[in-house]
Length: 327
Image 1 (cartoon, rainbow, N blue to C red):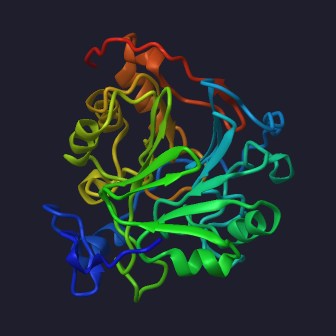
Image 2: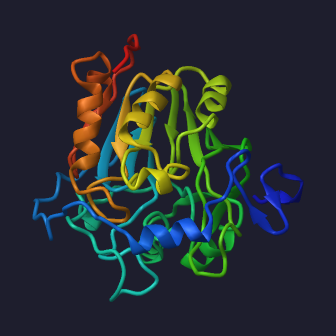
C-alpha cells in the first residue's frame, strides 16, 4: 500500500523534512568530521550466541529478544516481528569498507524463528541492510512495513507483501494494527538522495497494549504526540547511542538521558535500550551509552522499567504498570 506524500506537512520539493527542526548545515558537518574525537571501542568482543528463540509465543505473553543494534525480535499472540534486521559484517554500500561490527549478532541467522512481519524505520545502512533482507526474503514469507519511498527497495530484496506508509497512517494486518509514527531523523544511502525517502517509528497494537519501536530519532515533541494517540505503552524500544558530539548529533540521535525522558513521556511500562554497542557510528565510545543510561536511572523506579539487554538475551515483558520518578 502506498499513498502520495505530496500533501504531507513534512514533504516539499521532492524531499522530506523534520517539521520545526532546521536542517544541519554542511559547515557543521565539516566541523564534526575534521575535529572528531571518537571514544574507545574494543576491536572485537567475542561472545557466544544466545539460545534459539521459541518458534512462537502465544496468547498475551510478550517476549523481546535483543539481537544487536536496532534489531529486536518481538513475539506475542503467535506473531514474530523483527525490527531493522542487520546480520551483515559491515553496514555499508560495499562489503569491504565502512563501519564494521564490534561483536557478533546475539542470535545466529540460522536460529531465527519464522518471521511474519519486518518493520523498517529508514534507509540508513545500519537499519536497512539489503544482504540480510534478501536472506530473509528467500527463507521467510514476511510482510514488510516501511516508510514512504522504500517499497521499491523492499521489492528488489524479494518481498512480495510490502506496505509503505506515511506518518500517522495505519494498516490493519491479520488482526494487528500497525501505525507509522513520526521520528526526528533523516535519510540517505548515497550523497545524492538525502531525504528522498521518509523515516519513522512504528506502533504495533496488540490486544494487551501497544508496543512502540522508535527507530532512529532525536528527542522532540513527537513523543508527546505519540503518547496522546495511544494507551499506555506496554513496551517501548528506544535508541540510546550515536549521540556525540551532542551539538551536532542532537537533532537526530537521543542521549541516554533523553531516552529516559522519552520513556516517561510515553508512559511506557517497560522500555528496552537499543542502537548501541555494535557499530561505531558517532563519537561516543562503546560503553558510554549504557554507562550514562545507568547513571541517569540510578536507584529510581525507572531502573527496573528500562532494560539494557545483552545481545541474544530474551525477556518476557510484564503487564502491570508502575509510577514514574525523576533522575
